[in-house]
Amino acid sequence: MKRYDSAEMNERLNISVNRINGGYYIWAKRHGLQENRLTVLYALGDGKTHTQTEISREWLIPKTTVNTVVKKLISEGLLKQEDNDKNKPLHLTPSGEKYVNATLGSLYRAENAALEQILDKYGDVFIKAQEEYASALEACLKEDV
Image (cartoon, rainbow, N blue to C red; front, side, top):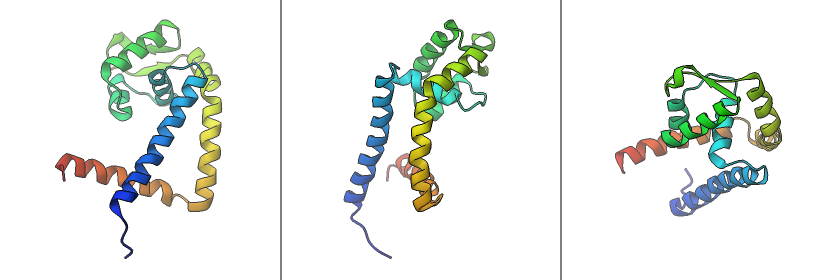
């Protein structure tokens, strides 16, 4: 088994993750979106039902921040939520679905184009390896190895 310089590999990995995150940040700014608004819209844009708590946990945004974005989206008529309860399902309204598709359409196209290039070259092993690394890192950080 080939041995790698762990410090160098971690640095390369962290730089690549930061470049990915930075790409989303730059895209959001260029399209006049606040980064947390983009994240909440992105989470809701998958067509599935989510709660504020789930979005906070999955996307690592403070619950208060998610709540602020959700209230704004509700006031704009883009989102509905039962009983204003943070654990109730959120649903995009029909105008919210149109807004998400129009607003995030170019982002989705860019992601898909980039992913197709990578999957053509590496197959789904790229995704599997990243998922496994994320799980391993979470476990090691919990143990504080």
